[in-house]
Image (cartoon, rainbow, N blue to C red; front, side, top):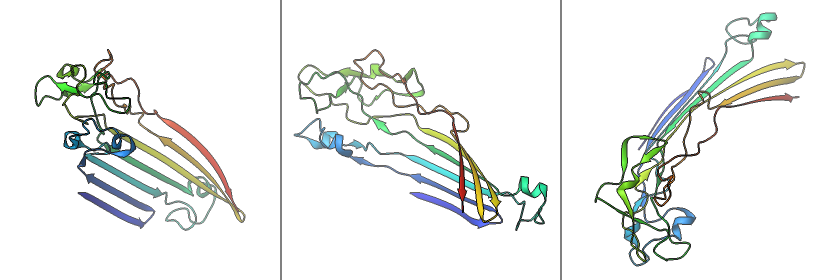
Amino acid sequence: FSFRLEKRYAGGLWLNANYQLARNRDIGSGEIEANDTAFAWDLDADYGYSRYDQRHRTAFSVGYELPFGGGKRWLSDGGAAAAVLGGWSLQGIVIASSGFPFTVSSTNVCQCGNFVPSRVNLVTPGNYGALDDPTPTRWFDKTAYSVAPAGTQGTAGRNTLRAPGTQLVNFSFIKRIPIGQARLELRGEIFNLLNHVNFAPPDANISNVTAGVISTAADGRNTQLGLRVTW
């Protein structure tokens, strides 16, 4: 299911908003999982959420040209104020999405080879270790899983949990300055304006002491400036 709202450019303003609700399930996604089935004799045992399954995704973008300077509502006759305030464009985008699924694993005890994932068992059927209020130091309850007996595969399944989602606010501004027949364009972009921490997936190997712990994150706030001359 998807929904889109669009306001075409008028009066210096435009906006675009969309929302997507999706659900994807399969027995293997992408090049890695296509060769990684845990049960070659029972492919249905790998049936679960796709690696790219993203339940919710929304994006909202907006742009506005300030109403000053030549051809605009105010200060259209030129002058120092028009030179300073005219030619500015502001743009922003907000992105929010739920996390992708991941599979809980353990050290390789099944002796199935390097390209076969080592699945784990559930301690209590139906309890996949999802927490109501997960934190970076404890994203899931690793005690909900147990290592399978040596020489066997676990039956907990693939992609049973979800990694953190993403929230981003990006902002940019452009100042266009006419210079005779040429035009100077100054552009500034601020990525992750609010410096929100977007965490990576946790360590999903229950054999590690850091299982359930998130130790990395996407880039924080980042600013870049650019200058362009067109003639």
